[in-house]
Length: 182
Ligand SMILES: [Zn+2]
Image 1 (cartoon, protein in one colour):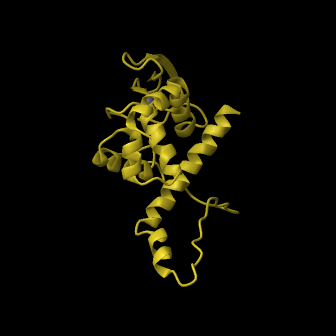
Image 2 (cartoon, helix red, strand yellow):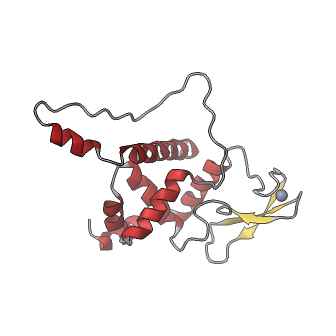
Image 3 (cartoon, helix red, strand yellow):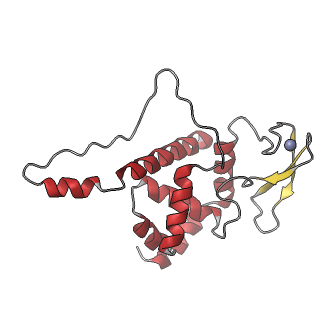
């Protein structure tokens, strides 16, 4: 796909749904203040440049924040829909170079984006604690090719672990998206 086609692909994404996705992901139990963690928060208009980006005011500490405050998505010049597409392509196991081509972006920009997305959406999010029965999906096992060890080594790749993490993140994202649209 040429970069020019992406204009259409990106245009198919609904800004409101992209922001709803972020809200659902970071605040599944309702909006909380990123400063004092209070849940007593009121809506306070929308971002001037991005009409779907909800602003909030905390009644407890009077702090102001919005949907992207404190996330890796804040303060970047890429629109949210580009981040969502980047995450989607990571889930499809595309390389940074392929993602850059698809999004019409610079390779080093995509490198930074994917590194940040792999670390998580929300900055300084507490580590996930696994309890009880844990289901792990999307496990890929590379089967051996008889007499073709080079082909196997090539498929496994040197950054297999990072790719696996990215697929996990994308899988979580898709599940979140699925729940929010249900
Ligand atoms: Zn607060």
